[in-house]
Image: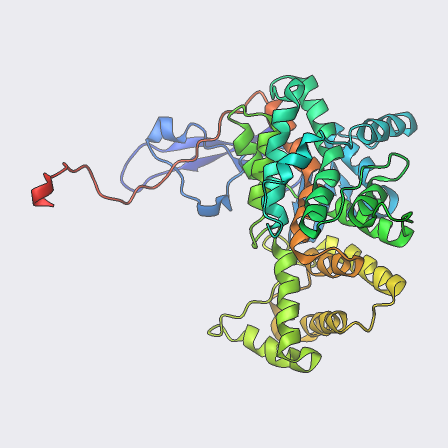
Length: 437
């Protein structure tokens, strides 16, 4: 809940215009917030904040990040505890409903998700319209948007029952859609979901099994994927989450709002970061591998070189990304299980990590390896192709998007989003005749 503070902020102007008091709100934790909703009505002025870096667009009870401390909480629970003590579907229940499930709730929720993993058979025909070499995110954006054409009984965003069934359907069907997009691009038959497997295990089987032989789920890889899903499930008001909220604020259906989030996540500065990181490692490998890491890092330090270090540092975390610590453990577990510690690309990645953690240039700027760095390495080790990385991220983030969307719709203060602007173009002018142009 927003708690009004006794303290008020006073806005005054040097041109003699009347000053105004602005209410101040205190959150449970985090910075106080100045309420500027009446600013335009009382002063005729807007605020200016490109990228919304100093603007709270909503009040929320879902996720809290302290970038300076390197802290991430889902509904108050530290990510470190959730990643160790819970599975992904427990985390989904927490994000959607506010609490971790008890034994009965757990059985019920897992069962509901499992029973919705199949998608309409016509989705297969929809896929055939794409080129075989299409980017998986291009396919996924289309498939998620198309869900609204198949599930008319859950497209009313203002109906709580519709929102709940849409949430379950999206969480359940995303692994199926991602696996279908992959199978289509490699020309293999689609594998149907198998309800006796875990969420992560079922996804692995749909990705890597074929009808030719039985598929056994490797428990180490299953845990690794489950952890990737947990660590990416939500991350407060980031670009894709804000997109989902803004899109949903128009009253559009949940599937369309989530498709908008998928499209936003595709960008290399957001969900595409782990794909960009692996591509960077590939480029260094072509330069000459581990022997060229020092030379590459010198180029990164040179502002004029245009060379960027992907997978290091984070816009919000000014300290170590707490998800990176957990993903680093998983990374070494997976490499050990698969005997890949001596793979040239992984040796190269570990050398990059070593320099970033020891070199004064990177330490001083707190350019630590982030979660994308390690999750990209883990996914490559598992056998997930690089272009599919962002689709895995979308699969994991779906629950966060839905939780945020549902919270917004349930907020009595929510309105359709309508950012303002500082207009610096031409003033009013008249159209001249064609002969005078």
